[in-house]
Length: 114
Image 1 (tube, rainbow, N blue to C red):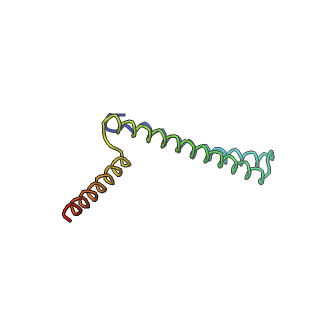
Image 2: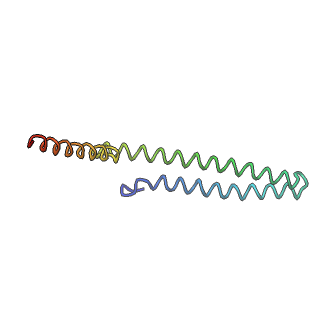
């Protein structure tokens, strides 16, 4: 990880999680097939078993992605604040204020001319 790419760690963690999910799904399917072959599980039970685990894995993946997004967003907001930059919301608010001041100023000028 370098200073030029502060999100490299998050990117790697995400890819590791994604790869682990894919490998896990493959292993779950292999286990289910093996149990069916040995007669310890019916084909229908194996299907439900693997679907249930896939659904759990997808939920965990979504939770992981959400946590990463929250962490990155938090980090970015802190960085913007520490650098003394304005956020997009602050910028938009300032633009509206300036526009409203411009409008008020031109109305005041035309009222004083009358």
